[in-house]
Amino acid sequence: MVHAIIVAAGSGSRLNRHQRKQYMPINKCPILGHTLRTFDRCPGISSIVLVVPETDFELCNESVINPLKLRKQPQLIAGGSFRQESVYNGLSVFNDTKAIVVIHDGVRPFIEPDLISMVIDGANETGACIAAIPVQDTVKRVNQKHFITATVDRKTLWRSQTPQAFDLRLIRKAHERALKENIQGSDDAFLVERLGIPVKIIPGSRLNIKITTPADLDLAEAMALTKTYTTSNQA
Image (cartoon, rainbow, N blue to C red):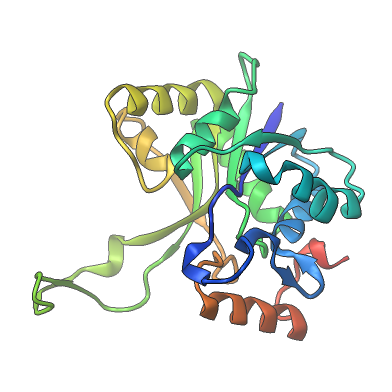
């Protein structure tokens, strides 16, 4: 059994728009709609949990979920005050003793089904697998005054993305320990790393962008209009 948790509970404050970024349209479809459609069509996914602000349940159903006519009806779960809490809320839904959970940012709409399948395969093999891309730019370490203190060897540096897939028992244990120790991580893989468990990386996609800033939204709109990506959510 493979479950998906789509996290879309953020406020999108950095976009400085009148509505949350997950509901903003790209090529006439909400950003979140593109993401859901791809997960719905991914054969490896058995069920979808969608984490959004509780006040958005009606809006999300009416403007995103219902128009898509999905085969796998998402279960709406209320998000927390920060991303890690939202993921943990999503994890609380599952009662399986053996399952894989795929966690993905709802505002990464250009995710490909093949990449989802690859992280699932990796998690089945190792218990923890994430998508990431190698750093190509030269990386500088700087001090508080913004002067360079070192040039970092980029050969071992990768930029973490989602989807990230884990054995359900493992990721639940990682979240519960973080909660007990009052630790907040920048992604779910970090919480698993704290358990001393190795996390496998597979190459992600540079088109798998996370929409955070106005520039990201402009880029996403251009990508959709010019069809520079080939995800199934354009079908």
